[in-house]
Length: 237
Image (cartoon, rainbow, N blue to C red; front, side, top):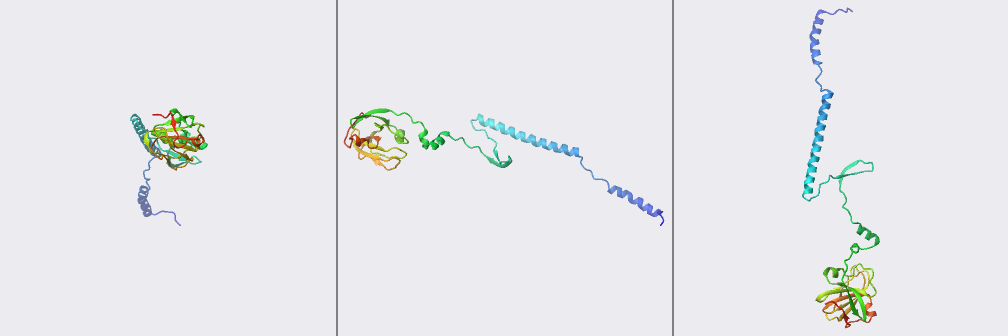
């Protein structure tokens, strides 16, 4: 076979070549350095935006503190055992007073942990004996009474002074020791005596108008011959 190329074929080939090279021209592509520079600018803008937000938050906190308010804290994020954030906001627990927790461990009522203010003392004579008693003359003192006490002195107790004629009832809610109560009128005469069991809500009431109620250890009055009609001296006026 001849290897010569005819003039016609040669001419057609020369006409096609320019179009081939023109279509094979590569499309413009952004260079890697330019793309990296643009990404860096975007990251810088994002960082500046975050810093600006933090600065605004700090200014707001300062304003809040000047006004006497509380600064806003960013929410904490809980973490699992591997240290990866779960993405759930968690809040700090409020500080808890240690005194009630210790009281629960020792079996004490939280109210008993609070130190009770010292009450006025007075000496009464009843059943031929001199006794030292605390005087509950305010509403708060009378409401608390002997609650949460674990014991009383042998000749000790509490005198409730209602400051005027009253028909009243006593109960033993949150009171741990058995007690006797004598209801006494304004002249010092015992109207009636009731025995009260600890930690009960049964009402024990005066049978007539009285001014005082005297709480002592259970059976104290019966042991010393005190009954309805007996007299009590030394009562505050």
